[in-house]
Length: 254
Image (cartoon, rainbow, N blue to C red; front, side, top):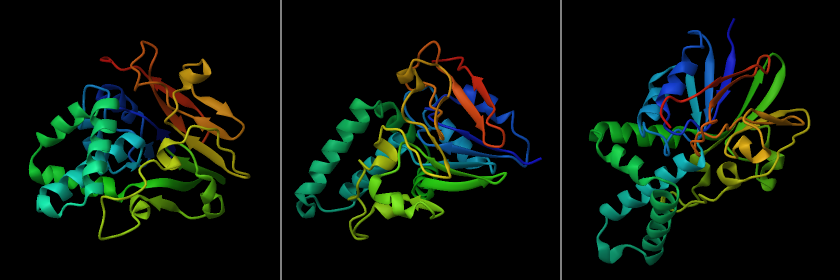
């Protein structure tokens, strides 16, 4: 029987992610709803594992999006005459470099990315650009909205769309460095209730609610079990949409 699973906020912990994958059959599918990178010991390996496993599909999280934006802006700067680069691009570069590399632990991730072969770097960037920010799935007649953080209020009339793409954030195709990276899809922290649908998010650690297990509030499930913080009680939750069962995997290395 084909089963559908969701996990979130793996944050570069390859060991527990590989243990979770062992629970899947060949015909199962797994949605990783954001934040494959940063924090843990395997900065690129989790993302590469997701890319190479046909059972996996990834949604963009705020850490993945910060990485993607930093690399997009850096590429723009590297390939243009310094005298022609708009001031707002330099400002944006400095802002996102500080936000990702320093405040959100992206520097080690960037170092690991730069150590990869150029073809592999390009493959990773193209993959991230193809990942949705929100996806609707139906399992056993139940409708689910999967999103890393929250659903922006202005998107409430657009919930029936199959997915929202990273490219949808870009307002000017000639300026791919300029898009709303602070969008609630990946940064929002509030409960999400949508009539007739279940909503599954990560991003906000369940320890915020004084628990180490998946938190359910109405038809909203928060499945981020704290790997980013690297608590002794942190784990990766593998949530089955078919029957709402959960398995937890503790990392060997925090």
